[in-house]
Length: 139
Length: 139
Image (tube, rainbow over all chains, first blue to last red; front, side):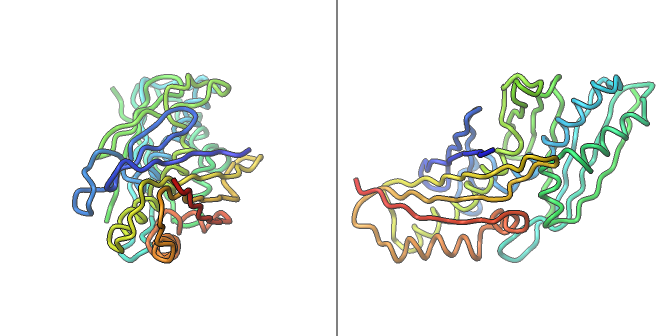
């Protein structure tokens, strides 16, 4: 399947990205000539990773009837110092909020995403050392 | 440098991504249980790629005094069929609009981004075959 997007220049370092499902502004930090009016491209890579695995988990938890009150996925990544700068180490933390967690099913959901379904994570593994952690927050 | 983002669940397949410079909604296609209310994670990878190299080019064209009337960067990528689905072939096309193009400087700008500065492209090369093309549109 072919996916297609384009980014259109809006002056200085500001761009509008147009994809079939919506548009988003992209801008650089003020320190490097941007105006801070949009997302940074590299951070979007991390958003793509968190979003991809989070969707898998939402879908799998529902299928396995292991729903939680709430959850979030946090990504922390180390950007190298020299050009071209890339993420060499990435940590993905899954935070589950609720009570009486079905931990076996929750862990199975996360593992299925990490090992089988999440294409963005598969791409990240080609350039980065990816680690994952699950946290439960009783409430 | 550590970069950090998180995505927060908003029910079904909808998530809000929170980064220091702004937030963006992420959602799945209606065919896979989403409501189409946000960007798709995989397409965000392509947006990150286009945005990263486009910013380099905007900055380099200015430095080299080779400004153009307008430009856009288009990314077309082939997503594999089997899980985990990833982009195995990516084509990046730079469209420059204007007249009396300083083509040597424009090409140098693109090449500097592709070969040296664009960290997102460096990451893509680890899992994908990346090709680039420059198009000039006289107006």
